[in-house]
Image 1 (cartoon, one colour):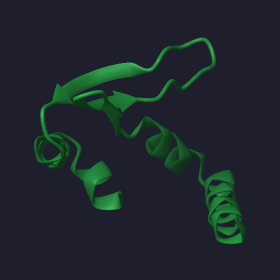
Image 2 (cartoon, helix red, strand yellow):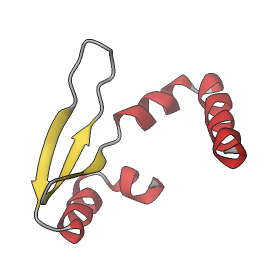
Image 3 (cartoon, rainbow, N blue to C red):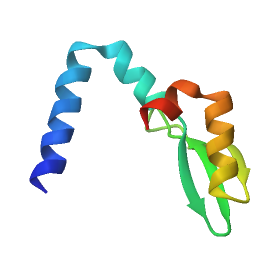
Image 4 (cartoon, helix red, strand yellow):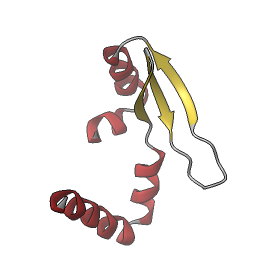
Amino acid sequence: MRSSHHTTANLVQQFATEPAEWLRFRERPVVHLGGEQILLVRQPQRPDEAQKELASFPTPEAANEYLRSNFPEAASQG
C-alpha cells in the first residue's frame, strides 16, 4: 500500500505543477479486458461523460500493435 501511495503522491505532485501533462496522461487510451475481447477505451474526462470505446481486438498482441501504431506516446509511457 505504501509504494502505491508514494507513486500516486509523486504523480499528483508532478501533475499539480504541470497541468498540460496531466491532461495528456488522462487522455491516454487504456486497455480493458471485456469478456473474450480486448477493449481500447478512453476514460471519461468529466463526471457527466461516458467511457469511450475506441476499438476492440481478439488478442492482447493486436491491441498492443494498434496502440504502438496509433498512440506511440501512450505505448512508450505505459
